[in-house]
Length: 513
Image (cartoon, rainbow, N blue to C red; front, side, top):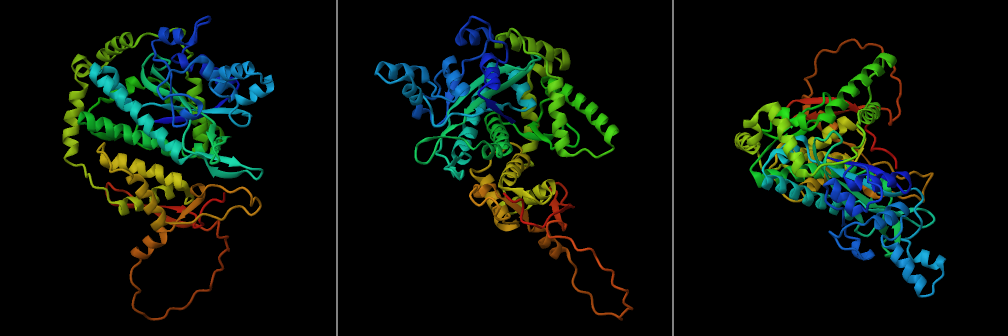
């Protein structure tokens, strides 16, 4: 799973600079960043991204406190202090030296985007309780998949606004990012996760520095999260001969793919914070429905989920422990929960379950069938109005769900998405005529579905033979509705039993940009 948030150059940066970089704890006063990280038992932050050579950095190089302050605190060159000092020595004025340390225009508010990568609960349990070789393997795969997700983000989803008319253009591939690894959550339970902070400074096509068009980037947050989930489970299952199964930890929500054979008690044990959040969410939902007598919408539920997570969030720890100490404590807690036999052999249990599942896995992907299914699902969930990113995310969910951890051929997700758009979708609305100078990327425009008429025609019986004429009833006039408000039926095909379900959606092409 990947979560996203924007980082402001003020208070939000201080949160990252004083807490995240030292293991989600509180940075001790009077100590350097290196000393604080060593005391917290977390590895140092490292730089990553294809734009590092443009600022003289190297991938894997250690992140310093001054570089964090310059890049994410002020939007300057990471080594702005060195650049300014060198320019002053050569005789430049202070103003000219300060301009040389900038990366394009000043940042107004947002200096970065914070991404948090964390594996699902079954992987957390395997990582926390497995042998040292299994633990290292999971960490290596986790690191590698983060690099894959970042590579797609910086090659496919970077856009900048250029000129007085704010024309949106594709930026040059490459970002500047700092990655920090942590091992536990605020409750002290196992939570392997990485904070990746991306600078908003990207290069335009003319090689000048510009500011990332953040909205276009964040719109693909779910698709990137599904890519992480898919690739992480594929690589772990391939390396350890495992398989995945769906699990529904929250009623009414989409299932989560977990490693087969890992006991649910261990998954819930590793996700103790999620249990507290869900309990508080249920209380908030009950209060809302009692007060309003209205059905709970997706948007309202998301706000309540954020509130529940915030209210159940424990304070930061003042001190952290080294990973070997944490692993010993985690093992004692797991043994008390499920017994020593289960804790000592989690990989064996997972492999036994995977052996039975692999006999039923279909490894070949029918792109045409997958395209039809994801279009129907997205149309139902999005009310008939959706975009490229929704289809891409659903294609990755489809592969994770149907292949059960078996690696999909490269670019299968994009092939399914392209087939869905080509065969089952109609173009979005034209650009807003009131704002002709603001041109959005083509992939961000709205889409609608055309599969409903096809399915209705396929199910319609042949015309019956003419029979005796009946008396005609008076015609009842029907209220005219606009094309936008008219409803059509979108079918959703369930792969498990082959049945179909219908939902109302709009026949219009999609949302105007």
